[in-house]
Length: 327
Ligand SMILES: NC(=O)c1ccc[n+]([C@@H]2O[C@H](COP(=O)([O-])OP(=O)(O)OC[C@H]3O[C@@H](n4cnc5c(N)ncnc54)[C@H](O)[C@@H]3O)[C@@H](O)[C@H]2O)c1
Image: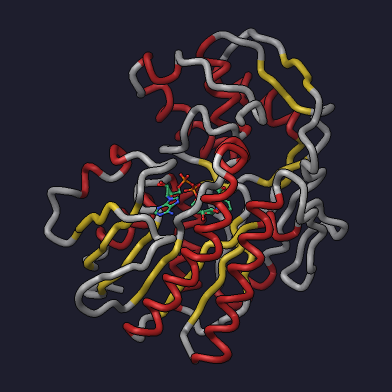
């Protein structure tokens, strides 16, 4: 695909910045939009010199105005890690609800196709394993994670409503844990937390007994899946993630091996409503998009570690705040 005009919200974030790279590289005009609440302009500063990239500093929970036509909108603006959405719960609810509403309104006005970034968190602490798109989830609406999970569930509902009632071309991706360069070391997610601790020579903190599982997808694989979904004609949710499941304890051990660090793994109490297991069923993505992840964990972890190591020491030597300790 080339020559299209694309709005990407959350452009200065981890995933948004990789999506900007992909669509710019293919010769599209990309408008990145972000209010920088959890993002960082350094993730996209290499794009500022390009003619086919523009940046709007804007909060998408407020009315969005973009002059000119748009072919596609990718709505990725939202705090995404527990440490962020526990710190800014109201903004998280607003961007999932009002921000999505604004993006859908813009898609309707511009007759653009819109893809929204949902999450495996819509499955909550799942009672079905692996998670298929047909599973409705097990979410606590009033628990601390409810602000994120329910905002994303509302996002999916309003997106389907715009599809059904207004005929807007919509796509919904349910993203499972993704990792790679440009994650923030202090965002509370397992991988940057482990790598940051290893680099600082601190013990690695695993919450609970470490038997809870996650399935980690390298960012380039995710971007390819999103790209294919955007160009498909399928409007219902599609899981994109890597089904290769690992316990957090084993994952911490892999990070220790990779970094050569001699520190220990220590255990702390599990946060409230932490999902015990997570693994996408990707049959739909395979069948509809002919997509499956290509980058194995060893290769992806190495690229991610090399990225963090390349940052100035002042970045990773900072002590991140503890998970869940934010007001
Ligand atoms: N990274 C993952 O593993 C993962 C998994 C599932 C879903 N997702 C979804 O993907 C999207 C991006 O996640 P990420 O990991 O890149 O997070 P991120 O925090 O790195 O990026 C999110 C970006 O959105 C911006 N933003 C937040 N609220 C905004 C607002 N009101 N207006 C404008 N910009 C706003 C932030 O400043 C940031 O740049 C999110 O919607 C998230 O829910 C990510």
